[in-house]
Amino acid sequence: MSKIEMKTPLVEMDGDEMTRILWKMIKDELLAPYIELKTEYYDLGLENRNETDDQVTIDSAEATKKYGVAVKCATITPNAARVEEYKLKEMWKSPNGTIRAILDGTVFRAPIQVKGIDPCVKNWKKPITLARHAYGDVYKNVEIRVPGAGKAELVFTGADGQEIRQTIQEFDGPGVVQGVHNTDKSITSFAKSCFNYALDTKQDLWFATKDTISKTYDHRFKDIFEEIYQNEYKEKFEKNGLEYFYTLIDDAVARVMKTEGGFIWACKNYDGDVMSDMVSSACGSLAMMTSVLVSPSGVYEYEAAHGTVQRHYYKHLKGEETSTNSVATIFAWTGALRKRGELDGISELCSFADKLEKATLSTIESGKMTKDLALITSMKDVTVLNSEGFIKAIRETFDAM
Ligand code: NAP
Ligand code: MG
Image (cartoon, rainbow, N blue to C red):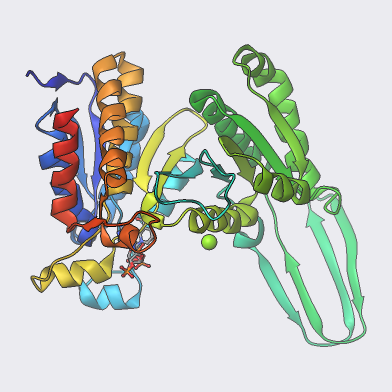
């Protein structure tokens, strides 16, 4: 059988620890035997980030802009312990943060559902995709612990000297105040990424905020989404039989529980943070969740939603057996290969991605899985495989298909 040829290289961002081990196994066992893999390789492992003064992270994001599609392995975000462990020149920033700042995107996360690993919410038949705005609000806040009686004011001083002033509260004793912001530019990017992703994946789009209470701030989000929808997307949505609607976050939460899933739920930064945790934990495991960063200009970066699985890596280093789930990392590769296939018109690449995903899920459904899933499955008599054994079992299923 001849291997599938690629046209444009994928931007490959290698990473750290256990996921770096899985990365190589996936390439060797599941990709290279079938595809003439064409990638532009960037080593985002912490050692190389340190060696290049983190330039490699910036270069990989620039390459993503150039080629359009990247696949990223989980990476360590250094803290004080890592600075010591890796003898770092400095505490390098989160690679995801750096890449996101360069690509200006929205993160879409969806659970990978499989028979035998059932969501806690019984009627969720299809995955619910969370679209989280990743800029501003409470994540870029300014806070004051009010010491005692006094007046708190909100003041805006324009570049032209214009002043807008409002009283927040006349305090008669101690308390707290907080200032948050967002920008039309960032909200616009967020909205466009959501509309594009909905069209791309052929799913309805929900957007919800608390505009009844936040009549200026949240209302601005609602208005920007509505304006962009009416001007740029309404026709395309209608042509594809898709729906966009805005509703109050309270209503969205109530409705989400009663649907069967299969739509995109766009959330402001904080709402997206907690609601994606809720959806993923209701679906069983972080290792069963896809994650893709989509920029408003239509650039894609696929990754797993989990980290480098440090605890398993230390066991691996000691020569002990690990049972680390590679599903999210496999799906990062299939997502990126499918997108590359779509953009370059290589249908074999798209069907390869579909088939590999199917083989992965069938392997689990046949009762062969890693330990994290064995602990939560409703299936009886399952076989718990080690990290490598699970990937080899997927290959067997794939070849049999
Ligand atoms: P983590 O790597 O996601 O692992 C947390 C725990 O979740 C693991 O110890 C394991 O539980 C379970 N788990 C996660 N992924 C799994 C998988 N694929 N298969 C089986 N079990 C899995 O999070 P962390 O330990 O907080 O972070 C480790 C490193 O990852 C940190 O340096 C952090 O900076 C980095 N990180 C990177 C990203 C990213 O690049 N996107 C995201 C988050 C964290 P048990 O130990 O109980 O088996
Ligand atoms: Mg969270």
